[in-house]
Image 1 (spheres, rainbow, N blue to C red):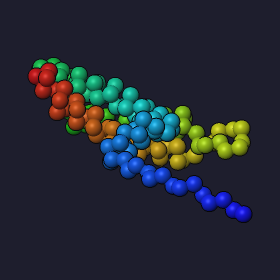
Image 2: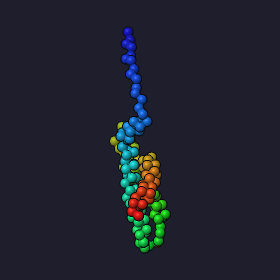
Image 3: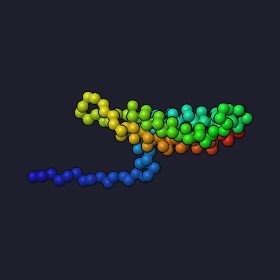
Length: 135
């Protein structure tokens, strides 16, 4: 004689915010590493750009003149390259049952995709928030 299964409990529906908060708290380590490596580089380069911008606006005579656009482009390119390279180096693919870690272009792609919005957002914060505070 087969037993009847236990009655199923109703699953409580979580709100959109509860789901996103749980995902944020339990983010996969490779994603956290990729974001933090890109964020660290972006903050350092963003502060360097801010120092350059403030120096120019206060009348400093720097070699080459006013190269703020070039400095911003260089900032973004360096964040993308550094984010890609650092993530490639510190985020191996899952090992499975083997003993050795494998890195492929996908590790670098994870870093690149994490670095794109971070480079933009850090420059927006530097130019639109921090810069007016120092004016």
